[in-house]
Image 1 (cartoon, rainbow, N blue to C red):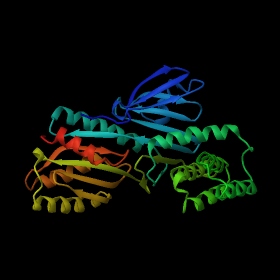
Image 2: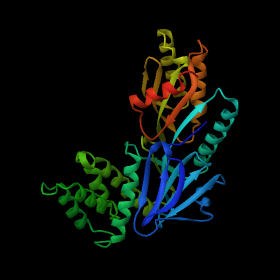
Image 3: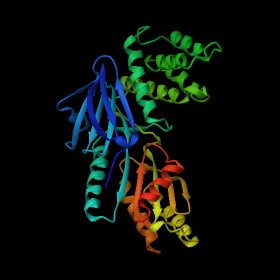
Image 4: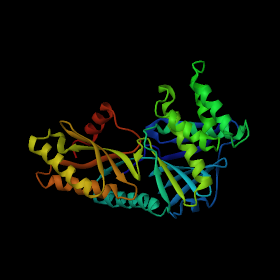
Length: 351
């Protein structure tokens, strides 16, 4: 089986706005107040160059919410110019390779996901910082409102940018909302000087607006690339971030039958993962071996088949005793908590 923690569930009118339900497991929803914020757009799948797109929704004049391959995951586009595409991807998959029927379906679904990115031509940039997906969506909605205010008119002069930055740094500016506003003003300024100031600020940001500052820096860069670059730029963001042209994923694997790992099995896991993952240009950031589970946090190139890569290393480990379950969980939303890990072990540990 497969599921997505941010899968498209339904869109329905609610109160004075629309409600976009995001995944039953996430217990989250976004209410867009005021004028209807979400409307169906026919034929918009061409923006992603994929015939597999099932549901495409247009948010105002800048954002697409794209549900790939039925219930796989949501991809959110925020477009800032003819040569720029911003993609926010949030997904959680659970794979069970012991069930032949579902294994084929999982392979097909994940292949469609990977191929969708393979079709995108251009230079990939990946937001390196870990910024919660909900905050990213909040940021771009807020930023759009700041841009539409256009006060003062864009582009801002260097002096105007310096004034905003100095106000941000002053001790009198203590309100979190005001700091967010100033950062978004700089991000939407269309000024190279503002980008340099945001770059400087993110070196030592105020802790309560750190994530907001990272998002502001990224938006400023997107805006400038759109104006000055002839090459198409593709910005990809996830909850766990990434580095260069690699995405960061969290993977949870369990022992078969909830059996504790023996010492030779732990050594096998450490050896095989350290050997096989770098061969596909993956980087291991954390490999934690618990009593009955393995947690992996690693970077993988955007166009690499993550499922095939993990299948191979698990199969190699199982050559030495068949001790790793073929059921594993992958997400780029966040690292799972100890409680969530225990829940998955209890649910899948007998496989």
